[in-house]
Image (tube, rainbow, N blue to C red; front, side, top):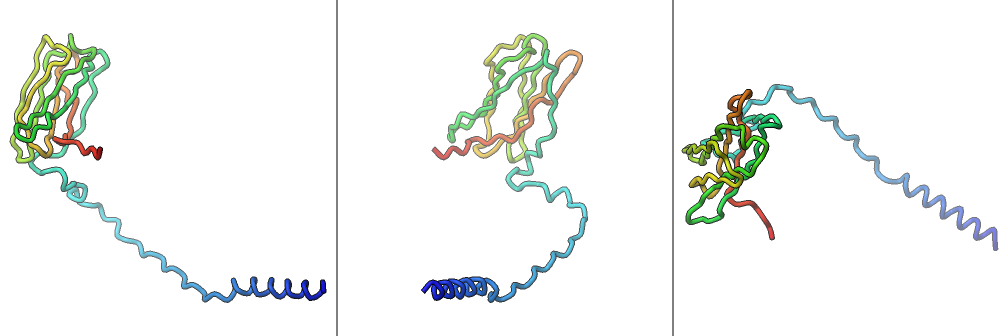
Length: 164
C-alpha cells in the first residue's frame, strides 16, 4: 500500500513539474530604439494653465535676515467684487526696509502697482481689484546695503481647490 501511495505521489510531482514546462515560450521584448537627443524648445515647458498675458514668474531673492519681511497674499473669494490682498505680516526689516512695491498682473496683461512706505505696521494691507481666475503677484523690497530685490513672484489662484 505504501508503494502505491509513493508511486502516486511521484507521478503527481512529475505532472506538477511538467505543467510549468509546457507553457508556450514568450516572445522576447523588442529593445526600444534610441530617440534623438535634440534640445527641446523653450515652448515645450510653457504650461497652458498660465495665461500668456501674465508672463512666467521669475526667480526671487531673499532679504538678509536683518531686513527680512513676511507677506501674506489672499483673495476675498467674492465673485461679484473680486479683490486680492497683500499683507505685511512683520519681520526684522519693519524698521529698516524703506519701500515695498507690489504689482498685480491679470490674465489679460493689465497690471496695477501700489506701494507701502515707512513707517510700516504689522497687518498693513494693499487691496487690488483682480481676476476671478489667476493673478500674478510680484513684491519688491528696497533695503539699505542690498537695494531693490524681488522677494515674491507667484501666480496666485483666486480660489483654492478645497474638496471639503
